[in-house]
Length: 348
Image 1 (tube, rainbow, N blue to C red):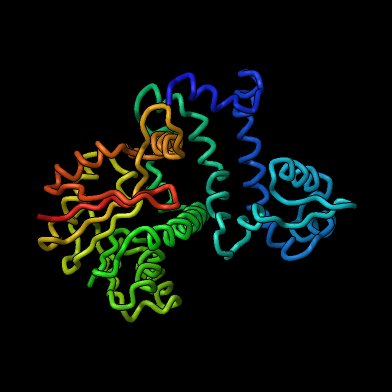
Image 2 (cartoon, rainbow, N blue to C red; image 1 turned 30 degrees about the horizontal axis):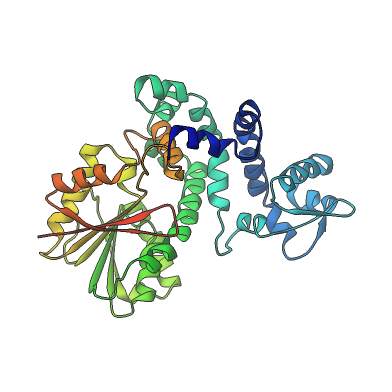
């Protein structure tokens, strides 16, 4: 796509460039309005029927007129539907803000609006000027250190990561053939949502969830709830130090985008060391598109610049370089219906 075509993409509605950019700039209004609805739990209280704004205000402890203005604003971007008499009902988009619903992204909506995230993004110029984390500049510690001592923020992050895992899990299962795998090791697999989806679809396979100690209890609970625990070993460890052996397929999902090249290579090298000859390593990460070709990951890369210590999204060439440094070669790349692709490497 040429530079001129990329410009046309942004103003294809026919708006003058200044108006189009103005609309992009006000995106923060939409983001915070969605966050407010998610944090208040409005979509849950609307439920399956139409509710008056007065009823909703009592349920969520809000000022009726202000809540009406919030919901009216959201209907203007397609979220919720307003009926007569200040009544609102859910639609497909507001349904995604409900708790514990398939396809829910309520957790991610809450994360996008949490105070420290906004403060860090407010200092993005620091990151661009220095290459350093704006989050660390604002908070005085890394994001991992910050959430380790703050239970509310940790809960928001965990809910957000579960939201993203739910979106990615089925997309990965649909895009990749795990039928030949005997033992699948998910390195840094959180509470095991992805591994559960894979094992459900592949009843002859066994799994190993390899995670930091703080996640182990939650992982056992989720695996038990999904009926997969009897086929899964849960092992505590740090993938930056070593990886448990015994698998023929190893997965690193959304891990190395948090880290610089040096530590990313350590993750991949440790997984490669645990692989048998012919074993496969699957990185599940976004793959950046060529210049001027739009992709969500190009904005996600800014999130990594602002929020992490050296984290970034990468091109296919970047992944080839990381694999080569760990003694592996990319054998295939499988796009998914989610943002991520499955980057497969085979150990010689």
